[in-house]
Amino acid sequence: MWIGIFIASAMSSISMADTAGRLIVSSHHSDEVFRYNETNGVFLNVMISAGSGGLNAPHGLAFGPDRNLYVGSALSDEVLRYNGETGAYRFYRANVLLL
Image (cartoon, rainbow, N blue to C red; front, side, top):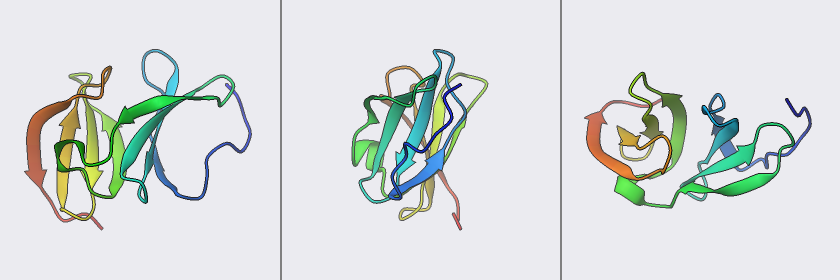
């Protein structure tokens, strides 16, 4: 695993690497979720675009046993579900109070 500084201060959450060895990182400021190479820290792509599924200030990431990625949307107090591979919104919302 690559060890070094590669995540800007605007990033708010880091999840464990996915099954393909990519580090999943959210940005509270840009409302996006990014993928980085776990081995060398190189930026790969935007996994979830700003506003997808109503995402607003992503905070907190977790892969579920169903291999979907669950993302806290801090400014809408929801947890949203996305396809863990493609990042496509999966039509699921849970209203919660995110602190």
